[in-house]
Image (cartoon, rainbow, N blue to C red; front, side, top):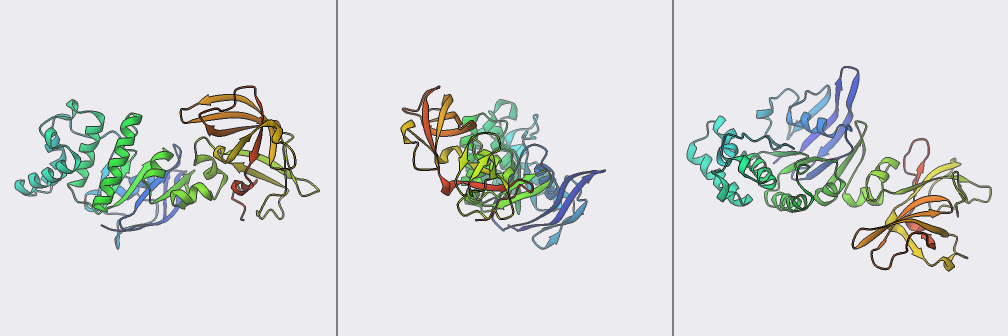
Length: 362
């Protein structure tokens, strides 16, 4: 096992910058997830660690060794690809042992290592089959097994579950968690799926436009997003945002509706006359319409659309003309067209600078 150090790493293609000033210490044994939308630079960063992409600027260290110009096979890393990358004409056993065979490891040692990993992954009964006769989940296990038999210092995962159906993705997430707990190998995992990131990661690196937007535990990036982008990207459904302008009495009025909020609690808004205020759908409380009154955080609303998800329901609301989404219990929720009251929990509000998009400090 080893730590991985990315020191001001950058990648450019001609005049186009894909990754800029990526600076991060990945701890020994950590499960780190690179998360972001398509084109944010997460896969490029992973491929630079693997040696599949050259590094334009900065230094990459695995352990204490600078790896910028080291061949991929000599970096002590093993990569699991999105499309499995298995040899269709070779058996499961041959696919898993290919790298060891190229290293000229004794046949008996190869077979022993394959048997141990196959038992760990539930592949013992499939070792003589070819990939074409396996399910998607079984092929992904073979790809993971091929990485494990190499006993690498670092595992690299490039969206390994994206080709699986939803039920199988949940199962494979559990298996990956158990596998990491058992092996304890430093792992870097790329995904655009926030559920995968939140459930698997020790820490999440959220990328936006080739730069790091925030690094933190799943709890930290959810509770304390550093930027408006992070706040909108983490959480499903997405956070509700309102552009609010400071009034002479200290209250804040929406620039696009009649919604008015009291003085924002605890945020340092000095010098800002316009801010972006956000609240998550699960932090809104639905009340009877008669509740509108003395509490300034209780606002009148109307249900524009109600969507049942099973245990939960999503309500699209018009709150003083502001369109917002609320997550409520899936039993006895308000119906479309119903008038109601909505309480915004002031302790769960987020505020962001309109220009820099950075979170305003509490």
